[in-house]
Amino acid sequence: MTSCRHCSTKSRRSTSIARIDFLGFALLTRDNRRLDRYSTRHKIQDRTRWAEIAISIAPEHWGNGYATEASELIVDYAFTERNLHRLQARVIEPNDASASVWEKLGFTREGTLRENQFYEGEYVGTRYYGLLEDEWEGR
Image (tube, rainbow, N blue to C red; front, side):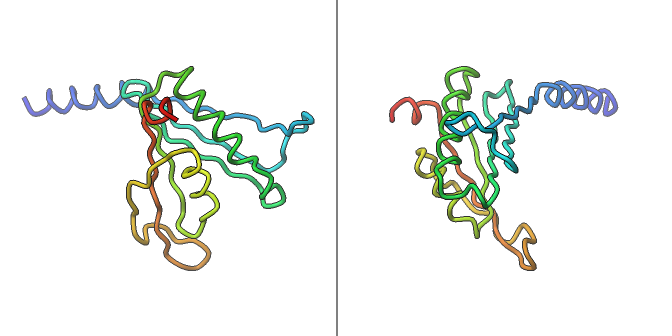
């Protein structure tokens, strides 16, 4: 009986893992030039209708509003096109600019994992932000 339960659990996990989808987007400036050295990461769990989203932009492009504008489009896509219920974002603690992007878009800071990463020679925490579908619609 134990082995059957294990097989059943393993089967459910495999099914769950198979439903995780990753998306990436290209970022273009208004004059149709593609930004160099950027990344987007979106881990989508369709079964539970949530996704973790992230965006990274090279320092030479900081301060132009690209992160906020791109993130806003991605959030809107997630809720309107993918019919997701929840979005989650992570920010390494020294990155206040990234935290500001999520806060501008209405994300709520939900918690911090203290000193869970080693970054530039020191332990830092990770802040977690969340946004629900009805919070986005109510903006």
